[in-house]
Length: 283
Ligand code: ATP
Ligand code: MG
Image (cartoon, rainbow, N blue to C red; front, side, top):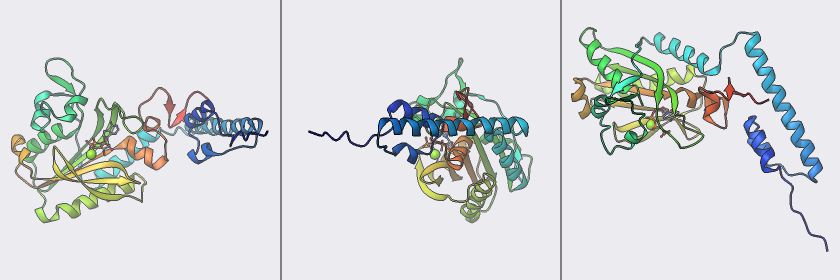
């Protein structure tokens, strides 16, 4: 009696290896007539991906190209500076008080994700607390409207897998002192500026709510959040001495890279000892 062995797919080890090498996910679903045919197809796919990875690393070296994350930072910096925003560079280490002022006190979910240091300090999980301080201090000096931005590392104990990193790069821009009625259109304009500089044409603005900011707009690419944006004034602003209308947008750079390059995991685009410029090093 013949028993049908069923379709022969890639083994788990083969699938895992091809995934690591960044194979097109649809190729992992293929079925084969025999184990020998499958193994041959695996070998061919693996060899192709290894060759492509080595070629990309060679090209990086030969052309003295910088990794994707660095190139993205340069492109966004140029675009945002070109739109009139002034870059600020603030500390990675912030006080717990800065978080409490942001509404992130005990019991807040983000609180659980904070990397605490000693003496009530922590690694910043977001740029907003520092930007609020800069907004207030520069607001005493500069005429309206004015815009500032920071691009730098944020730290969160995020263990949700392939879309979160413990350290990631945020671009946070904020404009203060614009007319109330201009906030929504300005937000859309700034989102467009950043998305264009990131080389992503297809995105959507989606309404969301946040415990910190209330009503928000997210920028999504294929359902993936790449940015959360909000506008003020909001009640919390009082604690920072802010009384004027503002708009603010926070983009995750590794998320932008992940969706643009169609990376299967975010680590490929981030700080890593496993990848260089998205290329897995065990090739
Ligand atoms: P998510 O819901 O995707 O976890 P979030 O709403 O908690 O993100 P925000 O606080 O809105 O994140 O941060 C702004 C942006 O920073 C996000 O849109 C995302 O692009 C990026 N980001 C947030 N957390 C991480 C993380 N752990 N790793 C990588 N990028 C992140
Ligand atoms: Mg968000």
